[in-house]
Length: 372
Image (cartoon, helix red, strand yellow):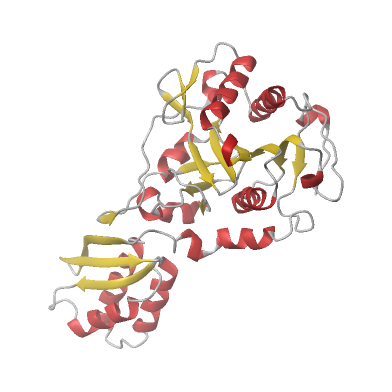
C-alpha cells in the first residue's frame, strides 16, 4: 500500500508519488528510495528480507528508510540474556527482535533512523554508503564533525557513536544497514542494554560498548524528518535518480506476497530465543526465610533456547532432595523463559500439601524465574 501524505508536513524536499498497483518492483530500473509507514520492527525487518529475496538487484539499487517503536534489536548470533535486560523490557513493553544480519545489539525508538542499502553482491560497499550519509549530514549542517571509522561506525566529534553497522551477504544480493541517532531516549537505551544476568558462559557474539550521542544534542534544530530528507536527496544525487521517496506499508500482503509469513517468523519464540547459540549459566542466590538465609546454586545448559541439563543445589535441611530432583526433571526440555518455568512451578506446587514446604518451594521458583 502506498500512502500519499501532505508534502508540506512530511517531505518538503520531495514529491511523494503513488506507484502502480503491480508494485514498486515493476517500477523503472535504476534507484529507488523507500520509506516505511510502519514502526513495527518485525514488519520492517520482514520487508528487508522480502526485498533481498524477491527483487532483482542486478539493475536496481535501493535505499530503505525506516523507524521503529521501542525495541532492542540483537544480531543473528547473539544471546539476548547477555545483551539486554529482558525483565525490564517485559515490564516496559519494549520489544525484542533478532536480525538476519550479524553484528551487535542496538536500541531503536522513533528518534533513531534505520537505513538499509540494497545492491547486488558485486556492488556491495559499506564505506561508500557511510560516506554518503556523512556527506548528507555535512550538506545539512556543515559544522558537524562526523567521520566513518574502520569499524564502519559513524563518530561525532571523534568520540561519540551515532551509527552502527551490520550486513547480510547473499549469493547474488546484499544489504548493509545502519542506525542514525537523532533524538533517541538515551536513558532507556543505557538501561535496557545492560544485562542483569550473572554467570552466563557463551560463544555468542558480544556487543562492544560505546559512548553515544544524539545529533539533536549537537544541534537542537535537527529532527528525523530533516535527516531523512537530506540522506534521500544525497542518495538521489549520487545515483542520478529522481528526488522521490516512496512510502510503503510493509504489512500489505497484496503488494509483498509472503511477507506476513516472514513477519511471523521474526516474531516467533524459536527465532527470538531459540536461535541463541548454546550457553550455560552458573549462578547462586540467597533466600531469606524465617530469619535465616540459605544459598541456592543453579547450573544449567541451554540449547536452542531450551534447558538441556539442570542441577539445582538446595541444602537438604531446607528442602527435601526429592522435591529438587522433581523440579530438575520437569525443567529439562522446557523453554528457558519465565512463562514456561512459572507454569512448571505452578503444576508442581499443586502437589505440595505441606504449607511450610509450599512456601519455600514458591520462593525458590520465583528466584528461578528471575534469572530468565
